[in-house]
Length: 201
Image (tube, rainbow, N blue to C red; front, top):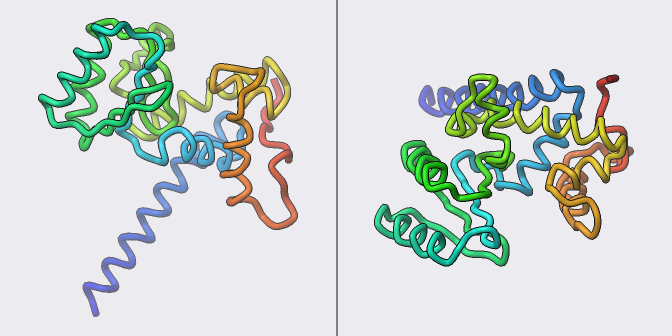
């Protein structure tokens, strides 16, 4: 009985901590926390150690070398049309893969919960944030929230801001995917076109 109660309390506290993580970032940038969660669901299925390499921007040599390293380290991966998805099983593996990709100048890869792209590396370093810090859940969400807010500030539209976060405005089904996840989180009287950005700037 005591064990069951302990487990229940543990899961309640864990859920509260996770909720606070999303809420803190959302409040800092004036974004509905459910939108951040929906984007993370689409981007990584809420997996903090996943890394996605842009398949179309690497050479054949880079691709084969990456596959070789993944097999040597026994790290699971999936190859899709646009990305090679690296499913690191722990923090150490994920850190090693980021170091490998960065040191070998792979041009485009996304990291962590919100799949923040390495294109932001210099900007992050100017704030004392190395790429592997994006494996920390709250850091990843904070960085992504700032990027998303800047997209909204530029376009002043839910649709355009969310598509811009994904890197392409026109002909991009990304907004629809995020909206589908968002609808699962909204109250019955709300819809995915509701106001999702609140900060005035």
